[in-house]
Structure formats: C-alpha cells, structure tokens
Length: 208
Image (cartoon, rainbow, N blue to C red; front, top):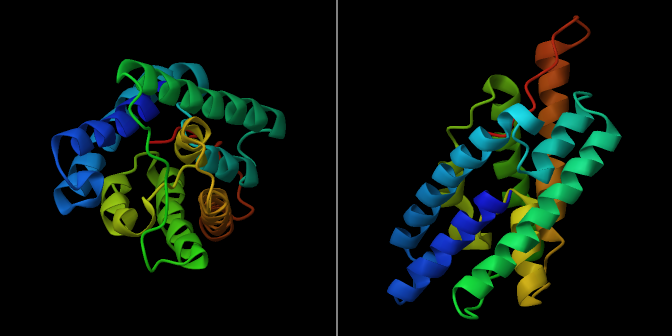
C-alpha cells in the first residue's frame, strides 16, 4: 500500500509542480492513470506471496462479502492498508519539503451523490474484474472516466492518507460508501450468477 500511494499521489504532486493545471488536465489524467497502473503492478507483485497483494479496502471488503476471507483477516488488511497510505503521504510531505498532499475532492458542479454513483460503478468494474480474472485491465480506464469528476478513487485507503495529512475531510465519506457498495454488489453478483451453490475453489484475493 505504501508503494502504491507514494507513487500514485507522488506522480500527481510532481505533475502539478511541472504544469499549471496539474492532474486536472487531460494529460494529467493520463499521467495519473499510467502512474497508478504501474504502481499497482509493483505493489501487488511485492505482496502477492505474502498477503495476496491486497492494496484496496474495497476489494478486501468484496472478498469478505463473497466469503473468500474471514472478517479478522479483512480487518487486519484494512488496518495495514490505511496505515500504509498515511505513512506514504507523510513521507511525500517530508520528501518534497512540505509540499501539500492533495486530498480527493469533488469537481465544481458534482454533487456528493453523483460522486457516490461514480465510485459505485467504477469500483464494481474493478472488483468484478478481480473476481473474474484476478487481473484488472480497466483500472486506468476508470481513472480516465471518473478522474475529472471526483478523482476516481475506487480505493478508500488511497483517499484516507491524503485526507489525514492534508486535514481535508469534506465529502470524504463518498470515497468509502461508493467503493464499498460497488465492491459488495460485484462480489454478490459474481458469486450468485457465476458460482452459485456449486463447489468451487476459493477465488483469488489479489487486487490487480
């Protein structure tokens, strides 16, 4: 989680320093998509053999709802994920000489419930793909789709660290409710429609 947030948020800070509009521009969204995709690949590769590569509380929640991990293990993952995010943002603030770590926020004209719907849909796609293939080729596309509206979090931990370090908590609940709802729906839909009551091997729990 530390690697993922450090690289993902750090890329946004670096792009903002080099350009006027930062990550809110089309080129900024593309840069953020690529940075998060590469950082996610590295983070999962590092942790795959240790914990299954869980770097997203929403995916962990989806795995719990689908009956693939225990509540105790899910809570342990959540604590580690949130702590890793906070530490990554603190390291970014120190490494950049006190530069502001941008918190997730809604764009002008985007209401909280609009953002919840975006997060539900994007996280549904992410978790559904994890369930189906354990590889998520849509992560970057989701950032391009929702980044201009609410930052395209899809990951409560990614939103939590910057909020703690920056002290900006406005509409923060959106980045928990949306991803958790999306993850739950994806887990239940896949489990009911494609698995049903048939005996099956435990689904991969890695977040790609």
